[in-house]
Length: 244
Image (tube, rainbow, N blue to C red):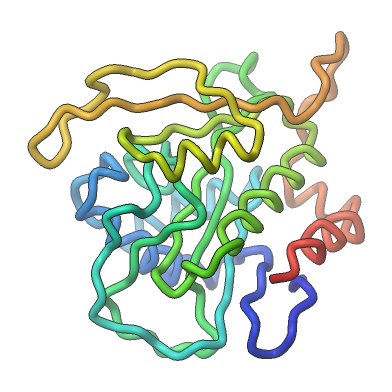
């Protein structure tokens, strides 16, 4: 399912297992920044297994661009932020900034960004929560691309019956703070000295947003692959609204 775009425009679609290596490529430059608390590039096999596990329950989106490759560039200093250990655990970001890949790219169009949700905590009572992550290549810095990814992801989670979404942001990151405020997130608290990364103690802000009512008899969230079978047209319309 692609959003409605012209041939040369970026497009958002659901990710599949075949996209995971490109997703890893987009994520790799963030290892050299405090945005993620992961210190080494994830090995392909482990990264694939973790992302496949996430996609068994939560949506994962990619943004594709028909622009050519842009090898050899470096992560932006004002790019996505979040203290995650990897895209299989905890990370949140500024969707309208990016870190670029330093890898040669073969596909055209190719993946220049991704966003997904994962469990916010392990106990069953937390099932109605989800944590958001988003990472963008430098070629996805056009205004609105990251916001479209974020908005689409939140709408899909609402359709799943998730009640609350969370994002963690390594501070300082004024752009990400503005982004989350624009989406109606509240800063629940700041975790002081949450981690020691690249020679400094880093604070982490927790952002939170309600996306469904807190009803007395909540339906447990539906696994996204099951929802895709039940409501393919509704999901398609959500993605179509993300036309870039």
